[in-house]
Image 1 (cartoon, rainbow, N blue to C red):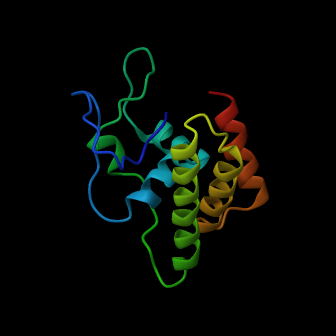
Image 2: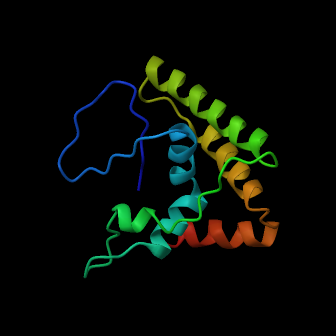
Length: 129
C-alpha cells in the first residue's frame, strides 16, 4: 500500500481515501513506513480474498504517535525527510527514495522504542506479505 502527500490539488477517484488536517507529512510518512503498513495490514478489515479495505474504520484504531515534547525532534526530522522526498520527486518522478524511506522507518521505530529484535519481526513480516 502507498499513501501520498498531494501538493498539486489532484482530483482523486471515488474510491480514494483523503485525509485533511495538520501533520499530514508525518502521517503520510508514518503510513508508508514498514511499521505503519504492518499495523494497517494487521488491524484493517479485509475482503474475502484478503485484500485490505482502507477506510476511516481501518485508520482510526491505528496507534499513530501524537507530537509530544519527548518526540518532537523525531517527528520534525520525519517531516523534513518528506520535504526532501518531495523535492527529489518534483525534480524527477522516478527518483530512488529508498534511502529516505529507510531513515523514516528507523525514526518510526524510535517513536515506539522498538528493540532490534522487534524491528526484525516487523521487517520480517513485511517481507512475507
